[in-house]
Structures are given as structure tokens and as C-alpha cells.
Image (cartoon, rainbow, N blue to C red; front, side, top):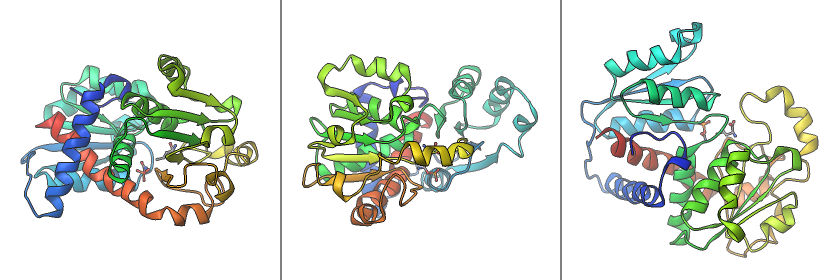
Length: 301
Ligand code: CP
Ligand code: NVA
């Protein structure tokens, strides 16, 4: 594994390897066992969009591994004034040991990896959010003891989270059911990928159909970063795609709920469901730290 650009690029074994290393690093941190695998290494973190979890977990993570993280806001970089990504890639490769980037266009992340000579980690694009889904899989495995054969359901917008969840969950052997409004389905390339998994993948516009017997239910905001002007229109369009007590009652009685955060209570999830599952949701947020440390060790050691 040279980069983490999207989960489509990873094998099942690579995904499980990251989860196992993440579990080990989490154990070591909890028991005060030093793991300075990246002593003296630097990670540049380019942000073209806002972030709480991604920024803080990467910055803390590289520090705990003995390295140093540089926060690089695109407003302050020449990239924000039109310097080509391929030149930025070649320059940063001369200084750093790795780059994490959060941006809009997936092509920008792929170009950075292609033109530079150091590992690139995708910290979210409009297309996917691989770091989040590695943390999600880690959390589900922690709570359920396994991933293979579990029924996962995603309710809402066919966005970056839906795209990455479909790929990650199918690759590790879960059954995947997605409920989206017809015009807001996951990316076509993802639907084509999932078609290869036959009856392990269901795409429907019916929440009640998708959630039946679910062991874990995921949702995400109706309007992602960059879609702020569509927020009002989406509130109306997605009104039937809310994770609430009535819908959850159709899932497996021990069903987990996951949300990548930030959550909009009263929109994609009710306050009642959120608070009833807050423990699982904040475990998920915490596991960003451990999963990303595993990714950095894997790529930068
Ligand atoms: N879930 C997630 O990526 O959160 P941030 O936008 O706060 O980084
Ligand atoms: N789909 C959301 C995820 C935020 C972590 C967004 O892109 O804004």
C-alpha cells in the first residue's frame, strides 16, 4: 500500500491489517506503551474544507507517533492562488514524509499522489471518506466482535460517506443495504462495483426495506460541505429519510447506530436516537485517531 486515496484501491487483507494495527495502537496508548514509529517524520495536512475530527485526530496522532504535523490551510497556501497541484506535490515531496489532504475533487488527491513522491492520505473529498470508514469498521468490530456476515444499512444521501461505506463494508464481508432518494444515489462507479457482490448489496428508495434486520445503521448529513446553498431544498427532499425511533424499531433489537459527525439533530437523525447511541457514535469519533495512526504507520514507517 503506497497511498490511501480511496477504499476501492485496498484489498480485504489490507483493510483488516489496518484495523488490527489500529486495535494494537489503541491498546498501547491506553496502557502507556510508547509507539514512536514515526519519530522525526513530518505530515503536511492540507485543508480546503472545515474539520474538527480529521484535523485534531491527525495532528494528535502524528504527535503520539513521535512525528510532527503541519496544518496547511488552502487559504494560506499558493494552491489557493492557483499554483498547480502537480507543482505543489513536487515541492512538498522535498520537505515532508507524508501528506493528508481534504478537498473537493478526488482528481486533486489522485494528482497529488501521482506527481509527488511521498504517501498521500485522503482526508475526505466529494467522492469518498476512506479514513472515516476505516474508523467505522474498527468501531463495529469492537462492539460486535466480527464484521463478516453483519447487515449494515445506510439511510440518506448517496454521498462520500455512502460511497466509502459501500466499498469498505462489502470488502470485509458485510451485507449492505442503502436507502436513498432516487436522484441522490451513490456514485455510478460504486454501484457498478457493488453489483459484483450480487445479493449482498441492495439499493432502494425504501428506508423500511433497507433497515430490516440491520445490525448497524449509518446515516450522514443531508447537505455536505460545499452543498450549503441546497440545504433548504434537501430538507424537503430527504424528509422521509430520517433515522428515528419508528425506523430503528424495524432493525435488529441490538442494532448499533453510527454517524461520522457533525450531526444535524432533527434532520437525518432524531435527538432521541442520537443520544441513545451516543456511546457508539463517540467511540466511532475516537477511533479516527487510532485508525489513522495505523494508516500513517503503514504508509510512512
Ligand atoms: N467526520 C469528520 O470527518 O469530521 P470533521 O469534518 O470534523 O473532520
Ligand atoms: N458528507 C459529509 C461528511 C462530513 C464528515 C460532508 O462531506 O460534509
